[in-house]
Image (cartoon, rainbow over all chains, first blue to last red; front, side):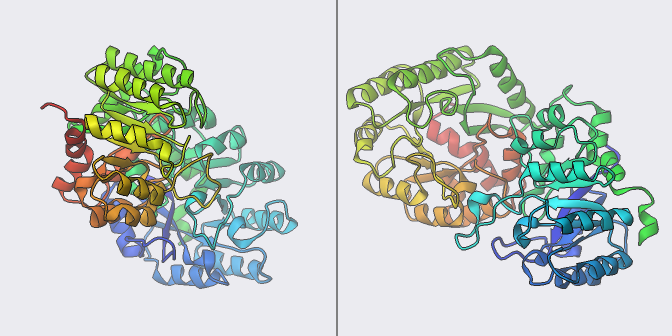
Amino acid sequence: MKSLIDTSVFVGNWPFQPLKENTCATLKRHLTSYGVTQAWVANVEAVLLPDPMYGNETLFTELPSDPFFVPVVIINPTLATWRADLQYCIAQGARAVKILPNYHQYTLDEPVVSELVQAAHADGLTLCVQMRITDERAHHPLMKVPCVPAAALAALAKQHPYARFLACAVFHAELPRLAGIANVWAELSHVESMETLVTALQVMGDDHLVFGSHSPFLYFKAVQAKLACSPGTVSEQTLDKVSYANAQTLLGSDLNNHR
Amino acid sequence: MSQALYIDFHTHLSTPGPEPSGEELAKAERLAQTYGIVKIVLLGNVTAQGGPNPTTADIKDLNTQTLAVMDKLPQLFTGFCYLNPSHPEEFNIAEIERCVVTGGMKGIKLWIAVKATDARLDHIMARAAEIGVPVLHHAWYKQTSYSYQESNPAEIAHLARRWPQVTLVTAHLSGCRERGITDIAELPNVYIDTSGSQPDAGMVEYAVKRLGAERILYGSDWCLRDFGVQLGRVQGASLSEAERNLILYGNAKRLLQLDE
């Protein structure tokens, strides 16, 4: 394996789980100790703060100027200022947009989402759809947030076949809804079965799975174990695709030119 | 991939009926070897047959299959006797006799047929105390709906207080979470297994702080989960090597009374 690209990590605080490696410096140290060569990072505080730009601004302020981190900004398209905010974030170096329809209380079939898809695509940005932050069974009793339905993401992706979508924190049981859609990728952080990668490849094929650890919410070593298949079950070529090559395709090339 | 020795305290197979699937056993054997798992505790195929309230015929089938697996691969597999406390006492006691006393199973598994607080568990707990085997009970705190008569960790604690002479294993660390760990913290006869949900960072360290590593058992919930991922939850936690070895091997060896 030549590289390991982690397509879904966070910095910042989350009120429902103490996060250990949650600054750019500690997270980079943690991820590189496991061999990660690039990480797509968002500030999770942008999820619950009244304006996600609080979190995005902090991300840009704290992000070191090295290509290890790919900045992902969280946009809430129900806020009147989202268009200007997106352009500002792009100017700051954002390479992908993350949306959380469940936390920001809209659905993927609303017209403004299509407008956001088009705006992100116009600047070559992948749209990361965060299906959940944590297992719904373990939510705070005063804050139960349902997941984003995989079928809704599938419908959105089919409506915009030119745009690239990444399903973040999707469960294994939800993958069939996303299978066979050329412009949808899934990251592995919440995908699990008796032999995770083998069965996930059977559903999604080897061009549409990417590695994502959901750090620092999950034990990195546990998620990384999904790439450590028993001998003879997954080819080196396929492992390379899942570990980094598909992520490179998803992000687009010339990464270093953007920051 | 790994030379260390691990004991997995929480697994199932997915095949219904009294006969195990050769293909499934071969897969379990291959994956166990890949990850260094030397002993697997099979708790019965609870999701494969009988649903939440299995009949006596379902129970007999599932336990017969566990015995068959233990017979085919005795080095790798041991088993727990799966019971439904709502069945007549005579049936449950006879099943314990067939599977544990005669058949060599190492404990009793209870799932969601009856709440842990239900007095119908008493004859099973009394027999477990007499023969000195642990009882592993499903538990979860859910903000979504509970399944059938599913118990939460506070209800396991209630059972543990009524039966302090029985070793109880609460299943599903990441289902019980902090509240569930505090529920059982002051009950020294209660252990917890590490299976359940996603490998949430910090949860194993929290359990060690509250319970001590001596009361935590590695469990995967395979075949619903991945051996490697669930091992990684313990391997990736910030623990001393002694604590990690207890969780991954030593505690289970002691509870299962395995020879060197």
